[in-house]
Image (cartoon, rainbow, N blue to C red; front, side, top):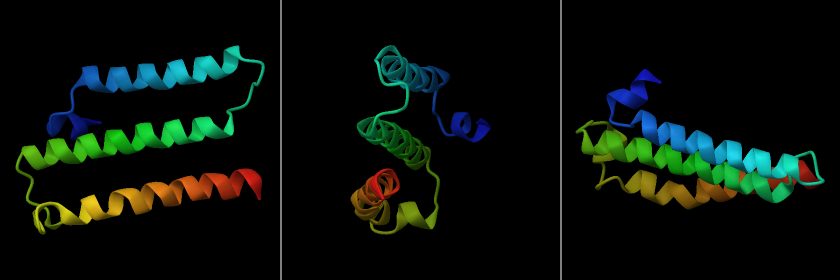
Length: 98
């Protein structure tokens, strides 16, 4: 958690993310289905991915000189975004239905 604050991620941003997650969870418990719906797993993965991308962007703006950031203007993280996200979604689907 200290690492997040060191690179400029604010407490307010983390609080808003937690509010979104709690609101999503409360919406599902108020419905007649007590377990998480399949489609809600996609929202949680997107919240996680958006948070990770925000942390990476904050670290990049703070001047962190890691090889992942400096190679071709952050090309590696840009190219891996959709394949990793879709792999996570495929994993959710396979776990849920098979």
